[in-house]
Length: 414
Image 1 (tube, rainbow, N blue to C red):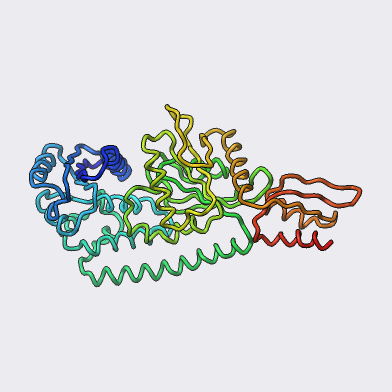
Image 2 (cartoon, rainbow, N blue to C red; image 1 turned 90 degrees about the vertical axis):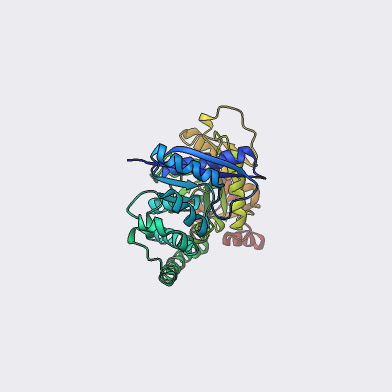
């Protein structure tokens, strides 16, 4: 049975109406993703957040009446709450109270599948909870299932700070070992000069569907926020025969909890270690500009903003009005159309070629191994056999630091 949710939100003085409404719409979607149904929304315009109760006393009274009237199970705040605000409001509401960050962390706790993912979520939840312990009294005494109670809460979280700090240290140690393993995989891929493409985008932009159709795989895809949490990597062969690896990553979101970004840094490093980024945008979403800006800001924080990127304006099939693209280079697609996926792979290849120098290499007829390496590790434009000189003439593009550049030197010496 769905829990009834009341959303409370403060519109800040310098916040645009459209931006504020966008955060409310997103909070409604997040609440539904967590298994709730929003029954009522109460907002207030304020110059500054009330330090003790987040909103004014009149609005607190209004919420108390609405809780009773709508039979509310949980109140969700649009902004992070301090321990004092949590305690004061919990005393007045007498039901579960969580904020936006706790809600996102709760969804991540539902979605994490791998051991690493689960550890990262638990770490983020504990780090979020630690400075707010004093405000958690009522919520901790009411643990027993429902939105905002998954993860570490399920094992009757002790309110002793030392206990939580010890647990945080323990999780960090276990994660360090997992991260070291992931680093080994990355180093091996770099050593083998495997070209890595990372798919990024705002949550629910259609990344996983695109990933599935591009790589003919069956990763979990659902029309919900954060359908993908644990990164998944598959092989993709581009039209020329060039072999790449594609990784589907967790969706980005406005106001992601800082503890979550910190905890998921090792996973997000899949993005900063990539050679190429596919930025997927839901072109049909009315807030797509805001979504693009959020993703670009997070890429900057991950120091991944200088990696070559192609913006994929997805869901073109449900686009009602003409969209002027904000990003270049770009392509409009529908992940469900096979011909669009063909167009996309050609476009990826075209953009990569723009970043790589052109080469022409002559190979003897007995250099089959080198020819095969050029076919799968570089982008070939043309390949002809010159019978008179008994050699292949291959033209294409490859990165400057690739080991196959030795063939160019060999040609110079011939």
